[in-house]
Image (cartoon, rainbow, N blue to C red; front, side):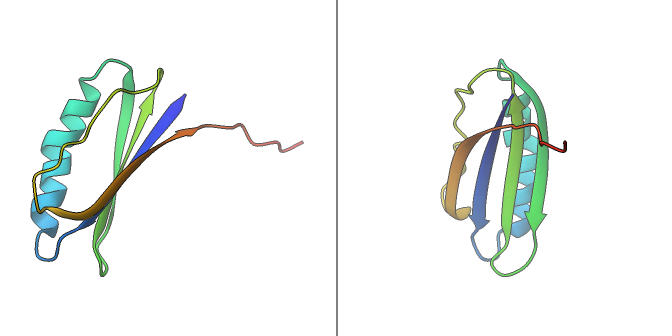
Length: 88
């Protein structure tokens, strides 16, 4: 399984708008993209505010977030592979 982590710092004064965009637009597009199995949103309301979208894929994702201009100060995505813990 591949986990795609998209993390963005929200522009000042745009927290509610940014979180709503992730919830209603970005997650929907991810879940309707072939190979996406799940999505989870994490938020940090501190200063600076940020949002993280974790998506789980059964194949390497071909997906672009495409956020609206000015909504985020910084955004980046990375693909992570899951490893099973060694608890022996």
